Image 1: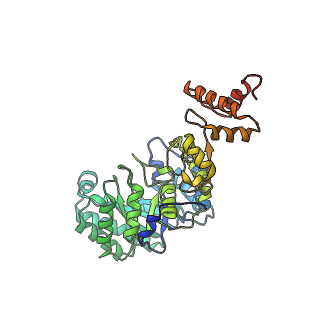
Image 2: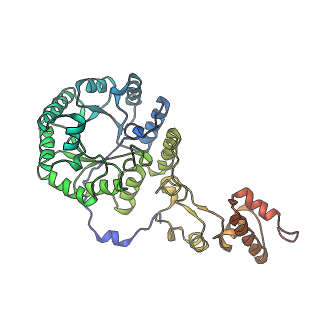
Image 3: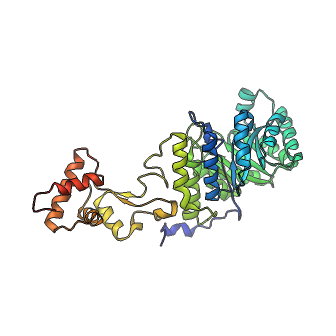
Length: 390
């Protein structure tokens, strides 16, 4: 048995679109994390690993930013990956020409839709925004690109205007419209309402682009998919501006294990790509980060360890090998005899029950003094036992 989750999940009928596209934006939105800048080699290595993971769409960058960025995106587009390579472009002809020069398969173009963005960032009227963005959509489609149109700050926009914007984009044959929850301001229930309202008037595929300002990016993404969206954006380790984006590893594993919606990812590579992105960004993975954190499959408490030794799924919802992790039994102040005995067996030591109890006491005492019990420390503890001890 590879996993065991709540049987109550099966009592609910989940309705997803048959085909769901995950587009990864680690190399674009993820790189907008303050202080992060990938080198060409790092971007290519991450793109290759995402392709190995079987990500269907990779947003490789923002070509108009610089000549160097354009060249990097072009290299990724010509890597021969299975994934479709897309990039970001503003609603400007120069941006779309830069995308065309980069040999990408498609673009995501965007326009602020909320009155906040129109008034304070763009200084456009609603009508100006509508006319400007549609000219660029038409230009991109005329040049054979896959075109996704994103309404920035959609979740804080007037619904009637949002419908007008998407409906007009649909009239220009966009391939997908994106709901951008730009500052993570929506609840899952609000997302559910918005997607269902849009689907009353919009026939084009809908994608979710959710930010994590309130820790709801993955929940909001799944709520959107359940309401009828058919695509979703993610980043590795959930990196991105402010609190980041929906985490690739959390979304993929939640859908696969909790909702029974397997998107075909080679999940055994998840930890590899997570570590690669962590190294390239210089951002450590929190120990308690779901799926890829160091502590997710580590156990110390004696009561827990006793159960995990007999059946790991007592304190794990799925086995670590599914995501390229390994289980670890950690020795510390909460360790019991069974955990220490397992460690002794792994090191090839044979001890009596009395000796085992002495070692357990010494392990607890050592950890309480602030020393972490790694293999070397443990062996030293055993070595320093009295002569009659091992």
